[in-house]
Image (cartoon, rainbow, N blue to C red; front, side, top):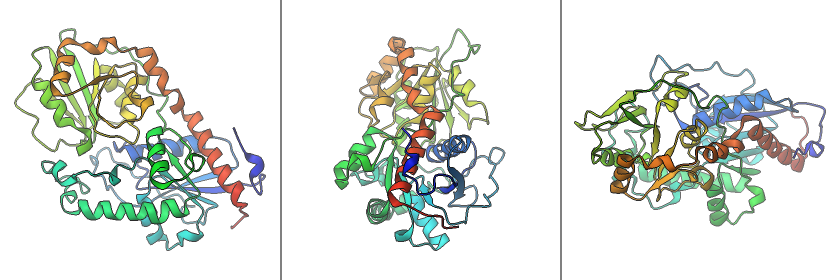
Length: 380
């Protein structure tokens, strides 16, 4: 798999800088968690690369609960000129270029592409009309900047990602297909490397209330998570022993007067494993996902998962889940406990390609290929 022989100086360390909005632990935000896990996995590998990280935005930008937020001290090498820069999302390119005053045309970089959903015809204003959680700095302004945001993101993707990136790492087959189709690039230029699902996710024996059946959900409650449909479907169920537990970001709306629906708050550090294992079933009705890490985390814990049949989620994530068609179908599934037909062994097996070491090796191979093709020499 490795291509070390392609490097100009295989006996020295090449500096690779990972750029994300933040590398704070336990953010609850998928893109941030993706970067934290990848950073730790790459640093644990013995290779010809020295890995450093740089946060493009300082501070608690996602407004996590203050008692949980722990910002990491800046890496002393974050402002050094690297051999290769890895932007963990296209949006971070402009932030880094502006603050670092670097010429992207003369920078060797790769980009992780999570999805191209911003290019689709999506009425963001309609979707977030009820989404009025004022606690999060990134959510309230969406009502006013949705159109400029889409335009800006499209411009960045077209002008920088597709034009100058030496490789585009796609987190799923779905994303790769969309990139290849829209930009007419080769699949070799946009390799698939799945996000990491930590090895800590595993089945646990958790004491449960035999009289209750727990339907769980964990997310940031952004519009694409489609939690309103889950709540509406749950209210239609007739089984009084069902209980819906909602974890994650602050709810942007009132959940209802149904006492069976409970908002449990932001999970404390280290509690995710126990929370997943406390569920009888994990419901994730998302409309679209670049990947869908919570689904894979639940599958790795051998907890059955329910997903939306119309949801745009990559095949390896969506398979071995029970898919519902609409609200009424979801209510029927919950009432009848139809998720018991899911093959939990096959579902858990889906996560093997998300193993830390496997993902780290695949990512390092992308770096080797890029640096080998560019025949870079030491610039320090």
